[in-house]
Image 1 (cartoon, rainbow, N blue to C red):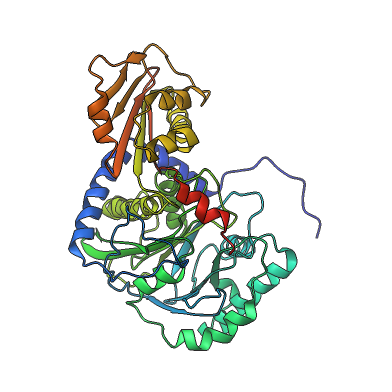
Image 2 (spheres, rainbow, N blue to C red):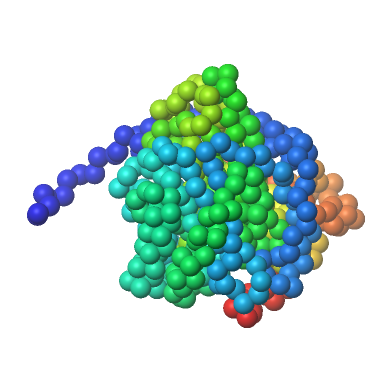
Amino acid sequence: MTKPPAKTPVPKPAEIVGQTLERALDPLRSAWKSAALKRADRNARQYSAAPAVPAGKPGLARSPNAVPMPAMPPIAGVELAIGRAGLYKHERPDVLLMRFAEGATCAGVFTRHGVGSAPVDWCKRHLDANGGDDIRGLVVNAGCANSFTGRPGADAARRVASAVAKRFDCRQGQVMMASTGVIGELLPDAKITARLPEIARGLAGDAWADAARAIMTTDTFPKGAFAEATIDGATVRIAGIAKGSGMIAPDMATMLAFVATDAAIAPAALRALAKLYVHTTFNAVTVDGDRSTNDTLLLFATGQAAAPRISRAGDARLADFRAKLEGVLLDLAQQLVRDGEGATKFVKVAITGASSAASARKIARTVCESPLVKTAFAGEDANWGRIVMAVGRADEPINRERISVKFGDLYAARDGRVSPEYSEAKMSAYMKARELEVAVDVGVGRGSATMWTCDLTHGYISINGDYRS
């Protein structure tokens, strides 16, 4: 049937909700984020650490910035299992299977990379078709990205989804997918489908740590986060896992993240929340400036808790949940940077005094992704001139006569020149810390942005120089 002539695009209701909510919540973001991080820290201390696990790739030492995997209680309506399909030469789990209760909702945020991948195409197409309503399964593989594989790659993804759907007694469009690994290699779907019966027999609610291990590639530690929130007086849980170490940059990061809650949240509200908080979390970290073809964040809500169903992302009853959700996402995003390939430093870069938030964000990203800045961090050299260089080449409005640069509480520069209280000895001592903070005020306005990055070491070259071997 011939389509009618194109009309001026009209924003979808969900987009309007997201845009309106973002404007309304913008002044509260900082307060929410601070509270969410404090609660996330308390949760990390509350739960015991999981046992040490081997790296996804043999021979990689655990990152010095690693944080313990929290013990993550079950999420009602979520079951997980892992298995080995043999996508790697060495012995390791490489498949994750998740089953969700009937009626679970889902929202996704995906890479905007021009190449993309078969699993990303699959998820986007089916979430558009079913609106994210009643999603029943997720299958993830490590070891093969199934990207740049054309029609054969799409067929392989469909066959895996179909096999999972038969096992879960649902339609194939109700099964989400994700892959990570080498680009340009076709997914050997038969290896996965042959192991599905065995993997499915292991489905359990308390397998979050195993799930985090199964999706690792060059990660050196499994990544998880957990929080509890209240909705209208009822307690709900939020749990998430992620993988990623290199090829990490905004829009989005080789990053996969899967987050589930037992709250009852309508698909449109879930989409608005995912779009809103990815901006301040996964799109606020960078390791090397390279985006992946497979980046995927999937957020699931099973509706199994006693809390009432929420239809609007801006519903006042969702306030605590919003804060905790952002805390979980930010915790996972920061763990990606902590595990940056070869990284020894975890660095926070805060830009203030910019002409707008977007301008501040561009300046922050330029600083975070500068090889000269990152190697200075690696060498523990407080070379603030490199910071100024990066700020200037962002091609954003700045006032050279008012720029200030701080490392922690120590001023390196004030009012466009070296600070009168600058101390090389104090700066050198500060740079030996594992976690660093750099703050730059560019002196033209009130815009601000924060991003997180890591240093650039010889380890990054070693890992990526022989990635496939």
